[in-house]
Length: 334
Image (cartoon, rainbow, N blue to C red; front, side):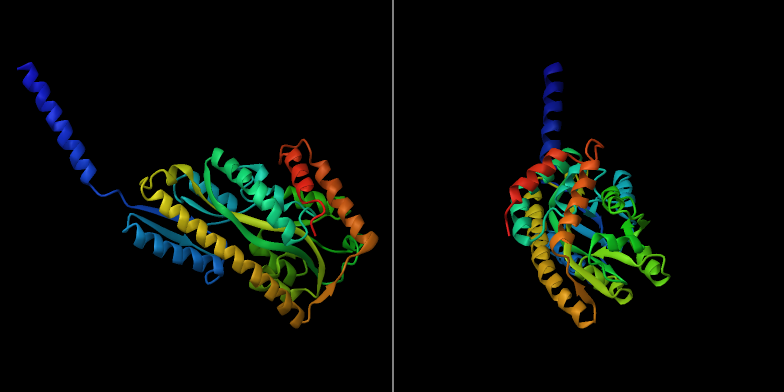
C-alpha cells in the first residue's frame, strides 16, 4: 500500500514535469526608457530591434520603448527599474554612476581627443566597465556613443580666462563638470536637460556644452553664435537592462536577444559618428563661428582639467588609478 502510494506520487510528479516542459515559455516584455526623442536614430533602432526580437522569439520577448524622457531623467528611471515599473533604458555615462562610478571614466574632460584614442580606449576598457555594471545589477549591451562635446556660447571663448565672463551651464548632478569649471574660476549654473533651451532663451545661461547633433536636435544652436573647436570630452552612454529582468527571459532566447541588441547598438554608434560630422557642417552653414584654442591656451585648458580631476581623487566618484591607466593607453595616439 505504501509502495503503491509512493509510485502514484512519482507518476504524478513525472506527468507534471512533462506538462511543464511542453508549456511555452512565459512572454516577457522589457519596458525601456530613453531620453532620445522620437524619430532619432536611437529610438528608430530600438523599435526596429523590438520588432525583430518579437518575431524571432515568436512573441516570447518584446520591447516597449518610452522615448523623449517621458519616464524622467536617469535617476528617476533607475528608481522605476528598482520598483519594477521599468526593466531598463539608455543612460548617460554620468547618469549611471550611481550603479558604478567607474562607468564615466572614458568621458573625463580633456582625456580622449580623437576617435583613434576613443577606439583604443574602448577596445581595452569597455569590457572592464561592462563587467562593473554587471556586478552591480545591470547587463550592458555596449556603449552608446554621443560623440565629442564642444563648448558653444554667445561670445567667443578663445582661452579659459574668457569663461569668467560667461554664464555656463552644467548638467544637474554632474560633480565632474562642476569641478572643471570651478577650477577655471567659473561658478556654473546647474540645470536639468529639458530646462536648458529655456535658460538660453531667458539669458539665465549663455554657454552650453553638447555634441553637434545634440545642438541641432535640442535647438540650442539657435541661441548661440560660437563653437570652440577643441573637444572638451568624449560623451557616451549605454543600453542597460536589470539583471533580474534579464533572468526572466528563457535561457534559449537570451543569446539571440543579446546578439540583436548588441548588433543594433553598434550600428547606432556608426551612424552617430556620421551624423556628428554632418552636424558640424550644418552648424557652419547656419552661421555658427568656429573658434580655435591653440598653444598656451590649450595647455592651460589641459592643466585646468587635470587639476580638477586630481581634486576629485579620493572622493569615491571613480577609480583614479583606472583613469591613469586610460591616459597611459592613449598617450601619443594622434
